[in-house]
Image (cartoon, rainbow over all chains, first blue to last red; front, side, top):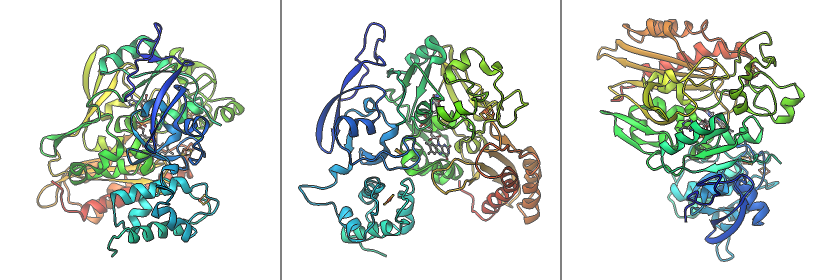
Length: 178
Length: 348
Ligand SMILES: Cc1cc2nc3c(=O)[nH]c(=O)nc-3n(C[C@H](O)[C@H](O)[C@H](O)COP(=O)(O)OP(=O)(O)OC[C@H]3O[C@@H](n4cnc5c(N)ncnc54)[C@H](O)[C@@H]3O)c2cc1C
Ligand code: SF4
Ligand code: FES
Ligand code: FES
């Protein structure tokens, strides 16, 4: 269901009034969520404050760290710079959606084994950016991994363990490595 | 927590409706495309629009069409990822693939649009700060109160008496044009289409800009950028070199865009050299272009053309890095760009 701007009052024909709450429907990790929000709420705020999906982390809030990364239609985007009303009807994947039927995604397993998470604050964003890369490119080179993760800051690991975890996952997912 | 201020959100279905809202509400209404420039600025209270007009519902505004032979048209809402990974852009407008692909991070490029990139607000260390920080220094000319920029345009508050913090005696703002794609599109001779409530017009990308940190766009407030028109590639070779502290995230503090057309024997028939990140708009380097035109790309020619941009590159001390370093790097980066093109086969 796409937002059409149909909610409105006589004063704001075809739009949403600033303090008025509107009911939006979001498709998150395969489930449908209905939530009443004001239009100025970012997806990050909705996930954490309204839906209790606190796996998505809250960092700089202005696009400079990547820890709030989620996938929209399988592409990484920043939830701190996306309005809830802007992404209705689109497929949203958060870190909570990575494990399937109680089984960790291979990239999560590799992060654990190689200790690619230290404080863990960047990890949800790193995992989602890594997953998006591996979904598109089964056998990424080290440069391609670095490029794909260059929008996610990590202050702990020095990045190498993370890059190795992506490489390990790629090899486990059956890709023939150079 | 930095939250967005309150606003009304409208999603018109076509450009004319969007223009009409802009014309009716004036500077209190602003366009949002990808939101990667406007939302951080609203969170920092640099912009406080009463109404945001989202372009997401307008059909075909993100379409890329045409060919290298006929010229390529980029819809204003095409994302930077779509532009930089487009096969025709990569093959025939390589400098644009580089420039658009060098903007911030891959994640931001999935969100940010080429139209938003061309309309990107100018930047300054004294301006791109939170409300509290700016309040503590007593604001600056570009945003002389806590009320944000639309109010400012309205009441011509540039006569507010609040000084520029970089050049306190100056009567203008020197905030820096920091768009990566603009210098490259100017070098490639691109045009763009603006649709406003009074009709539409096509202008060169170069003419979109004023050399003024506050009033950096020449277009009327109710004019919306709908498409960018690249001329036929016609064997032109192009490249873009960007200076920044980190190879990801950071805005350019110097951008060097070069487009060249060479005859079969290597003689440069046509040269465009445009620098970004050194002033309030992208600057064409006329002397370098003259030096290059009519000659072959020899080491001496490259050296002479590169040295000629040292004087006209006049950055101010309002971005990252020391300004003399940025000035010294202008010839260095032009030399690297020209050397790259000299060793590159032509891309038709
Ligand atoms: C951490 C970070 C790093 C960044 N690094 C860079 C960088 O290295 N290089 C760079 O160039 N940019 C950079 N940016 C800025 C920004 O992400 C890009 O310039 C992006 O392309 C802006 O596009 P947008 O669609 O998100 O613009 P928006 O934020 O939606 O809009 C930007 C401005 O353009 C206006 N606008 C948008 N579309 C139109 C239109 N069609 N017609 C008329 N006006 C319009 C808006 O009203 C607004 O004033 C960075 C941003 C962040 C947060
Ligand atoms: S150049 Fe001066 S007026 Fe402009 S933003 Fe910076 S401090 Fe403010
Ligand atoms: S919270 Fe830092 S990029 Fe979104
Ligand atoms: S593990 Fe601490 S920021 Fe990456």
